[in-house]
Amino acid sequence: MKRTTLAAQDGEDLEVLSAQLQDAVARVKDFVWLPKSRRFAALVNRFKWETAQESRSANLRVRSRLVIDRVLSVKSYRIRRDPDAVAALLSIRYAPIGEDDPSGVVELVFAGGGVIRLEVECIDAALTDVSGEWAALGRPDHQTGGR
Image (cartoon, rainbow, N blue to C red):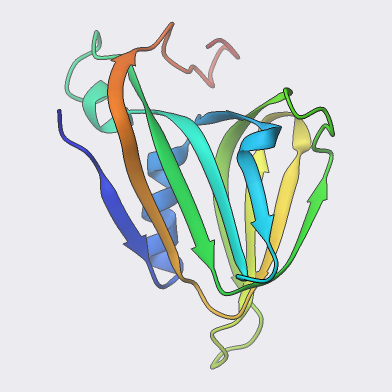
């Protein structure tokens, strides 16, 4: 089993994390904002697109930890308040505030229109697999709206 560990320090790096996390699912209670530490963290079950590209039958998931540091504020929109509600991550977007300023806004975009918006001092993120992989129930399919 190959465990992924990736870091992001700019917008291009964040696009790589976004691709790795596309179709990750998590319970709302697994998203945590730690204001004193200026850290946002999430435990997600990510679909392993890197193995799915190799073989149509390699539908696997792995538990992964996403950590974003240097977070100044966190706001959520259309995210259910039920801690056991499941959220499906579609992408991560980044918008810098200024041309020469490293600060900006990181948005985690979820199915159903939900967004978690992080105002960051700069991009300082990491994605680490923290478990073994297991067989996924299916392959996410955005063309037909299936799993």
